[in-house]
Image: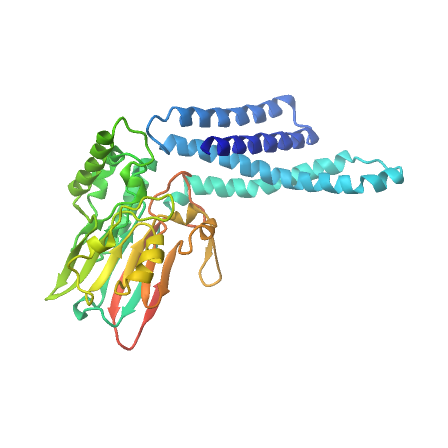
Length: 414
């Protein structure tokens, strides 16, 4: 299946490249300019093939992601160049019988030159966007703030502040200073607790090594708690044995402990204030379809009263959709991640909200409410597969819990 997709991508790549090259001829580009064009086209494919087939057991390392970014950027640029060329060709074909009957010249080089120049001008728009996404957008951290009102919140937790982060993906990072700024921004929120909802790595536990000290500086008075995401289990890498895979998993557990994080694996902890408490419940990854289902909500809730106020950490929002909503009406707030909002989209508060992610996930980014139960889908702190973000920026979520019998719902401060 994978190789079928790759073949299809390469067929599209070369067709678009060839069609784009026709615009260079129309613009009377010198031979060396056309040579550079084709050289770049071959280098992009060669670079991708090299990093893909030499990856070993590491999938989606930073070099691989940049190789994919190069291919994707080239395809998008060529597509925008080709759109006016294709429209002009279609129009020419439709008008050809009439021009032939009128014995008019069927081809106008000057018009073809204008259309080619228009195509390259149009292509500059997505090219600029892609470059921004790769070099700036992926570190354009946004702090999104919500205030949630609950009738059954213990009074001692009125005003309690939670900072949620998700999907760090250490193996993708390439700029220590930018990541340090993001970590400092998390700490600057001065929340009571920090909650991480999975995908610390892309594949391997050793991706954390150079970032362990930095993420170990995360601090909140009530601690830093975490759960596992689908990428954390090493399921997308090849292993010499089941024992080697398990050793990698155990290493990731120990690294989180060394950072001072409290990993919840189908278990719960109580946060207490002056005799009152709320239950912090963490499950392992539970995803729809091909994604792993290691999560056991019943096990995590063992010993928790139905009347306790509960916050659930579950990496994949489909868990809330398929299990929590229909089966557990007593879970007031669920925190998830996983989708990244596909790292691209358009979000204009109160007017427009779109991402390709919405065609895959019903709950893909932001705060949702269903039957007095809340879900926040964090857009992710890091990035994966494509080393950039455009329109859907890396997110730090701050949630304030309020106790009020007069008010209910969500208040936002984006």
